[in-house]
Structure formats: structure tokens, C-alpha cells
Length: 89
Image (cartoon, rainbow, N blue to C red; front, side, top):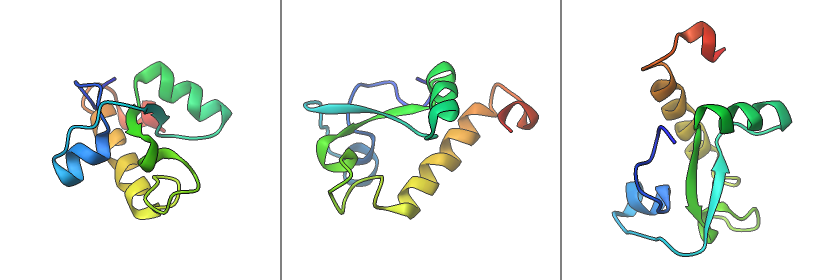
């Protein structure tokens, strides 16, 4: 993964400075069949705890559209540190 060094909930760490290491889910930042494969290939994924990943939680990345957008922007920025914009597109 190019976004995280530690296996912990990305949102818990960044937003609350809390280390959550149990019940983690691997979240592919770009969804859909083709994009999910590319997320996996390039390490564009993060670990999220159950609360921040399940679709029926109002705290979930799937419910919080602004948070989802910020994570996508971060992934693009990290990708473009070693690749071109054209490769990203």
C-alpha cells in the first residue's frame, strides 16, 4: 500500500489519532470491477475498521461522500508522486 505504513484504521488514525487494529477491512479507494483491480494493483487501498467501512453505518466511507472524495484525492496525489497524471487517468 502506498498510503499506509501500519495496518490500522486509516480514518481512526487520521481523524481521531486513535489506533484501531482489530476487525479491519481492506477498502479499495476506487470502486467498480475495473477500478478495484487497479486499486489493488497500485496499492490504492486503506484499512478501515468495521464502523468506518460497513455500508449501513453513517460513519462509513460509503456514506460520508466528502471523506470518500478526500481519500480519492489523497490516493491520486500519492500515485502521482511516482507516476504521471496520464497514467492515473
